[in-house]
Every structure is written in C-alpha cells, then in structure tokens.
Length: 145
Image 1 (cartoon, rainbow, N blue to C red):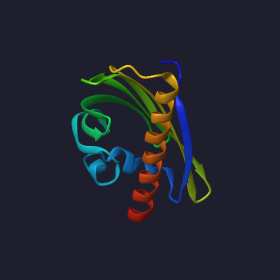
Image 2: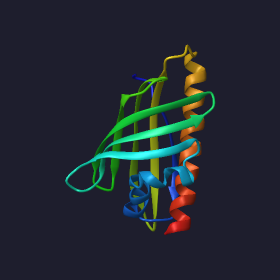
Image 3: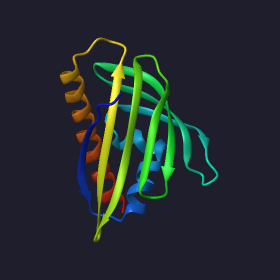
Image 4: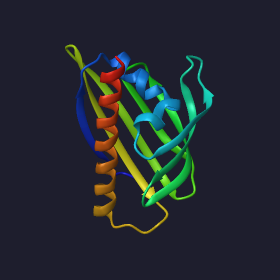
C-alpha cells in the first residue's frame, strides 16, 4: 500500500487537546461519521489505546475492524489494520504541529477493500473519509476545548 491520500486542517487548540480527542475512541460515534461503536481492547503503559475495534457503517462499506496504534507523544499517531471482513488493509496517521495558538493536523490514509475498486475511485473515497474526519475532529476539539 504505497499510495496514500492526505489532507490538513488548522484547529484552534494546542496539540495536546487535539490528541486527547483523537485518543478518546469511545467518543468517536459522537463525531466521526460512520463510526457506530469503538471499543478499546488493549492499552499501553501510558494508558493510550494499542488496539481498538470499530463498527463502521459508511455506505458502501459496512465492517467491523480492529486497528493497532503507535503513539508518538502529542505529535503523531499511526495505525495499521489487524483484522476486518471487508477491509483488506488500512494504514493511516495523524501528525500534529503547533502553529501559535492553533495546531495544524495532517491526516494520511491508505485503504484497500476486498471488493474490486479502481485506484482513482479508491483515492477519491479516501479523500472524502479524510476531509470528513478532519472537519469532525476540528468541530469536536473546538467545541469541547
């Protein structure tokens, strides 16, 4: 999965506040479009999730999948797919960079599904997922900070 789609947004909060919302998986159904449930299966020594199972209903994809997370303080988090039914592969990351009183958030994502899909359509779907997630993240952070 070499090709990734990425996009960025500026959030009016510090990186720690943004990362706190990213790390609060149980709240994802409240702001992450299509996520119906998120359950933390394992945490690291710092109390951050290492594995999370999601129930997703974002037509045309409906799946339950588990991701494994690698945290780098309040600046980056990376994830990879552990198991799923419809998804064959998923790799992604959030990278946060302080920008004065705000944070620039870059979301990178690469997804492969078991149903045949032309590369161009896959990139377009990734772009919609990323843009929707970034807007939801921004709204959640800025209304809870």
